[in-house]
Image (cartoon, rainbow, N blue to C red; front, side):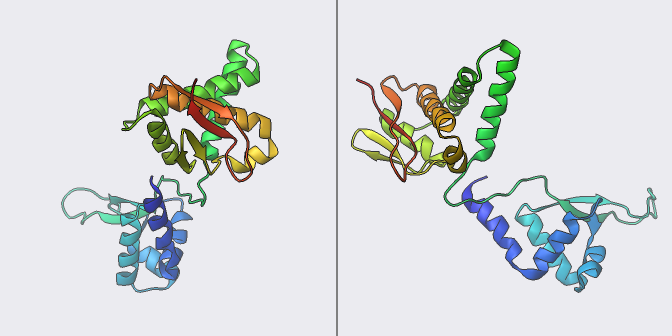
Length: 224
């Protein structure tokens, strides 16, 4: 989900009645109807309907239809429109952070190390490279090699910019982890960025560890 969609969804909860309805629906074990939700937060049913449907539009709630009487067939009445919390996850971080990606890479590395008898660092670098390679291979981009790498890394939250013949990364998506586990996470970063370049088919691009205050520890250059 892109940043605009995430912000719009979370921004929908700024309205107090809408937020109260969302919190009520999210806290119920089963899907709830408009009347039940309206009674729970103390608003008219037409008000509840408006805000509940807005939450559906923003992807925060899902809808299902079911007869509340349990009856079926002729005379059972129309199915009621019921609301439940959406399964979608919503997180907005500025600057961008991607701790779920780091967690996925670390979990994959630990599983591989245990299964294949590899060292954790070797397994981590391999997992990070593979993840980056998959992202690069699945993405279409235009321009020369460094421009293509820069474009993909922007999409991954790195705030990449092309400075002469170097891709500089103004943001580390794993910032908090990198501060506490610098060597481990910087190595992960380098392998991931190299994997992106390799996945794009870039033959003359190399990711290097070149730490600089206020930037990600990795820079990407043309190989000599």
